[in-house]
Amino acid sequence: MKSEAVRRVQSGTSWEETFGFARAVAAGDRVLVAGTTSFKGDVLYGEGDPYEQAKVAFTSAVEAIGEFGLDIGSVVRTRLFLTHARDVEAVGRAHKEFFDTVRPVSTLLVVQGFVDPRILVEVELEAYRGAVDS
Image (cartoon, rainbow, N blue to C red; front, side, top):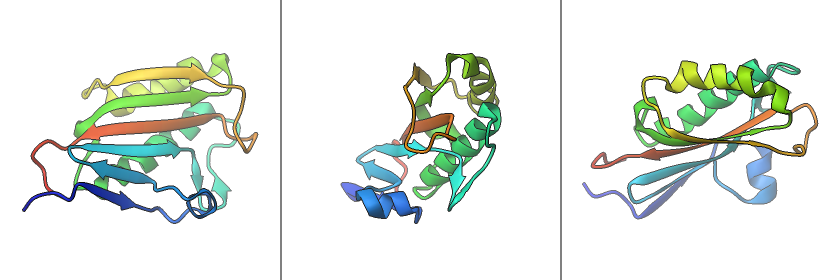
C-alpha cells in the first residue's frame, strides 16, 4: 500500500483550531511535528520546571509521530526553544534521556518568550518513515 502524499493529524488542542494548524503532518517520507509544549488540554504540566516541561513536550511530540506508526527511533531532527539560557542543562538532560540512542540532529534556541509566560520550553520533531506505510 502506498502512502498518501500528505496526511495531517490533530491532537484536539484549542490552538490548532484557533490558528488552523495540524499537530503533525506526513509529507512523503517526512513527518513534521508542530511546536509542542507541556500543555495537555488547559493544564500546563511542570510549571516552573524546564526539565519536566521538556519531558512532557517530548512525550506529546513522540505520541504525534505514533499516529503514523513511528516511534522515537524514527526521529531525525529536534528543535528546542527555551525562554532562558539557564535552562539549557535541564532541557538537555531531558533530551538525552529521550534521544541518546537515536542521536537526531538538534537545534537549541533561546527565544524572548511564548504566548503563555509560564511556558519555558517548546519542541519540534522531524521523523523519517522510509518505507513504512501509515
